[in-house]
Length: 379
Image (cartoon, rainbow, N blue to C red; front, side, top):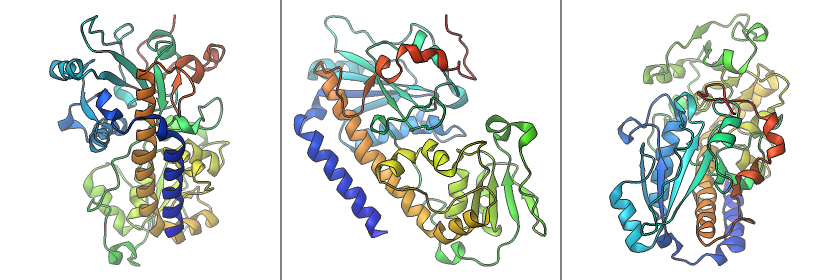
């Protein structure tokens, strides 16, 4: 455990020593961030993880000392725009692409223009899910400008997925001290567990219907389907020995592991465990830390996998905290430094940021599908 903490601390020091010296210590005073969200702040915690992530970025930027606002509006409130004008700040508008099923966009309505007398501004495109999932090539053709700065939430391996790990901008809200998964050792190591709980959520989205196996039907082990995703269902996990989830990207696997219930993720077709890990939000962290596995989670109903999960479940919660710390301290600050550089005219050789045609060269557009829930088709 201490070795992992030392590794993360050393990595952060390395990043800072190499890159921070060309940004002044007070560069935050030159920027104002506006995160365009899906929901209002009151509704941020919902069944849409991507929606909550947007408000989490607002929180983290504020914690790091940056003047930041968030909301559903295309541009920041007038009082913030005026503050930017008076202080000579550049407004950085962070626009999400792929925040789950609530993704909507309007071609042409993209940039905040305050005129000659107003503050400068530019857009950052934060891609939350792999292009072709919720949104796809249509955003490149209809929405993104060639000089928009692009960052990704995950690394996404496999196929033609994106995999430049320095281009990550990532924040996570969970876990946190005192949350519902912060349980006692007595509950975590409770031996009076039995049976299998399972959740079918998004099985038909990520797997071929006719090929999905009912691996919850294990001889001699009772199985109970989890119908809902409320608090009572989470607490119910404490009575089960195993939890099978068919959504390979659901946070429910980690909730189960932190509750002491062995989480088993139904594997993706033709995808190894390492390839699956690289497609997760924590994949870039695993890659940059030189790891080859994650603790506390089994990939498929395999005895070696189950034994690995059982033996390392106690490491899962600390691991998630380290991923969270890496996101806030490494990726967010790296992102803000690139925004400072963009303000001062830099258009290449960023720490992590990339312009549209660098991240997605035009000759690759033909290989990117239209988003599954897109309202628009490319011209």
